[in-house]
Length: 484
Image (cartoon, rainbow, N blue to C red):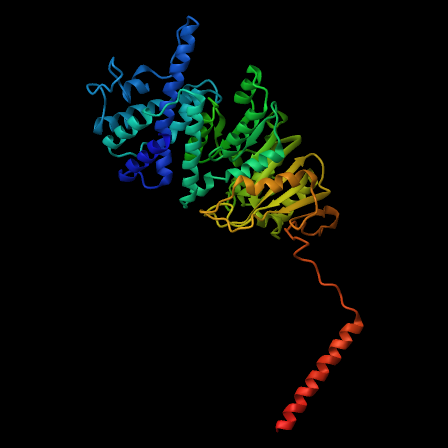
C-alpha cells in the first residue's frame, strides 16, 4: 500500500507543470506528509490529554488543521464535498494563507528545540510547486490514506522515505549530496559503538541518514526505560544543515524514525567561528559525510585557523574543535585529502595527527557513491592524543559497484570484524607516524602487498646477464655481416 501511494504521488507530480525533478518530487511530498503527520500527532496528544481529564491546546489554529482545510469530513467520515477546496481555490489558500501562517511559527516559538520552531523553519522558505489545484487535491487524498497510527506503520513509512532519498541521489544533478550509502553508515556506527548518554552530532547532516541510523542502532540495544527513551529522543542527536531542501528532508526523516522535535538547526555550520566553541558545545561522537569540492568565501575562511577555500578541510577543523576530549569521529572525505601537497592540506594532516589519534583509514572503492564519480576514504579518530600508528583497510567487495550492484551490509562485515583486532592482511596494514615524511605528512593509501619492491639481484647475476646480452648482440651482428 505505502509503496503504491508514493508511486502514485510521483506520477501526479510528473504530470504537473511545477515539479521538474526527483528533488521537487520529494520536497513536495515532504511538506504534505509533514502536515498529515502533525495532524496525527495532535490527535494522539489530544486523546492522551483527554484521558487525563484535561483539554489539549492545539499547535495550529483550527482553520489551518488538516481536518479543516485538507480533508474536511462528514459525520460518516467521508470527504465533505461541500467544504473541500480544490482547483485554484486550494492553490490560493496554500500559497497565500497556509504556508505564510506556518512560516510565522519561527518567530513565535520559545526556542529552536520545539516542534513549533521546526514548523516555522520548514515552511519559512519552502514553496508549493504544484501548479494544478486538482493535482494537489489528489496528492492530499493519497497522503491522507496513509496510516500513521502504529510504530510498524511509521517504520514502513520511514523505510519508503529513505528509498525516495536514495532515488533522489541516484537521479544525479545535486541529488547525490543527500544520500550516503546506508551500509557504509551502519559500518561506521558499529565502529563508533555509541551508548545511551552520549551526544551524537552531524554538522552537515543532509537527509539525517547518520542520525537516523544511529538512533536505530542505539534504540535496538538499550534497555527500554522511560528515562532512556526521553534521553534518546531529546538529548542525544544534534545536527546542522545549510540547504533548505536537505533541512526539510532531514527533519522529516527523523520524525518518521520516531523523534518528534529533532535537534537540527537550519544554518551554515561554517559561518560559526571555531574559536567561540565552548565545552558545553562539544559532543561525544561525530558521524558525518561533509560536502567536499565546494569553495568558501574569504569571510568564512576567517572563522578558521587554517585558511582554505576547500569546504571539507574547514569542516574537519570544526569537527576537531567540536569533539570533547576523548570524543570519537567517523568522517567520510575525498581520498585526495591524504596526499594533496598544497599548504592547507599538509597543515590539516599535521593538525589532525598531532591533536587526534587517527587510528583507522578505510579506503572505499570507486562506485561507493552512486553517480558521484569520486574516490573516498573514511577517517576514524579520537581527540586528545597524537597519532602513533594508523591501521589502513583497503575495501574490495570483489565486484564493480554501481546502480545495479550497490554496496550492501554483507560487503562491510569483514572490515567491521577486522577493525577491532587491526590485523596485517592482503587488504590491511599499519603505518607508523614516525615513518612519515615530515615535510608533507603524506597519508596516501599504499598497500605494501601491491607495492613490494623487487629484491636487489646479486652483482654476479647482473654480470652474467650483461655477458649473455653481449653474446646475443654479437651473434646478431655476425648474422647480418654474413648476409651482406
